Length: 297
Ligand code: CLF
Ligand code: SF4
Image (cartoon, rainbow, N blue to C red; front, side):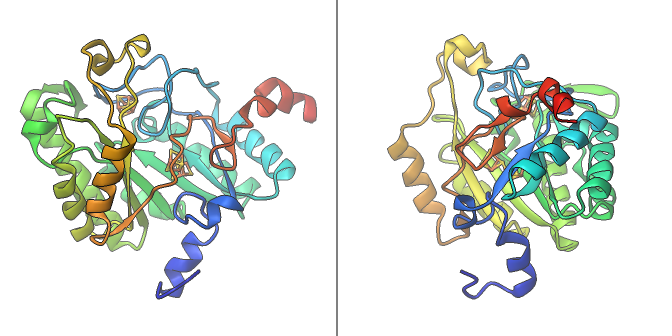
């Protein structure tokens, strides 16, 4: 229920399946995979698959043009009436593909104006796009923040590509954390709800995520979603190949518990694919391939 939440915030969360634990039983989201490129490298990413920001590696999602994506949204919304939210979450970084991402939002806001728009990003170029995000009425932005300490960041991110130049090591991580936190502040100043996703990587950032939690809370983040690293050698990620393990369910819960009280913690994330369709935990993307949508017309 609304509890003591201000009405303008309640209006934004009550039917968003990720922002409200209750809503996820009743409302569906869909992602469209319009954003193939990325501007950083995470050691938990396998570019052959979807963005590990938001996804379980293993299945390649179908890449769509903005026009195909908008058609798909209209087709899904007419089939699944509980579909309230359209998210762009990959397979790369949506803001490393700004033309495709914002063109998709523009088409959808015309063709399906009731659908809420949602965006997930690594944050590197976020400050440059805050005005555009606000202009397209994107109410929900997720930033994946795994550290606020560049020394720790250097163990997670081998490089970032920023303003036409490749940076590595601590310097790269410092640029990334500065841009992420600046972007978060700019969004929350404009009243855009921000969720922070963090990937829990045992031995690297597990102790540190409590500090990340404080840093994002103090900058106005609404919700913190700490997700387990999914690591297996067959996924071909740097961490997987190095034998880096993911956390146990108990370790994850203990960390979430120690952050709870500081701010709202999300505990119902299903680490969706970049082309997921349906209720969280349900995947109906196979019903809505481009071929099938063309047949529906
Ligand atoms: Fe998608 Fe992400 Fe928007 Fe939700 S998913 S872009 S906020 S509409 Fe949700 Fe999926 Fe977890 Fe993401 S369950 S991976 S938190
Ligand atoms: Fe991969 Fe996403 Fe990281 Fe880019 S931001 S390297 S797509 S996990």
